[in-house]
Amino acid sequence: MSSNAAELYQRIESDASCTRALFRQALQNPQGALKAISEIGDDLGLPVTTEEVKEYLSQLDNNETKQWFVKARGGL
Image (cartoon, rainbow, N blue to C red; front, side, top):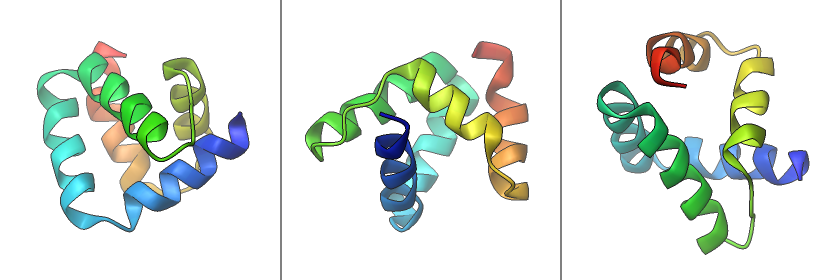
């Protein structure tokens, strides 16, 4: 399923409004943001678990994502 996480990341990243909404949610409710990401994956036919999302995000070599992950990590 890690390939699903990668594909889902690409799709979310290409949708600026979705990315902003998830960022705002992650700052307020990190677990809710992870759940929302999983639900988006289900809707797109790319099912992922919250653990797969966390693992994928932690392995990215992308400064913006790393900053998001650090800010949201307190609730992850």
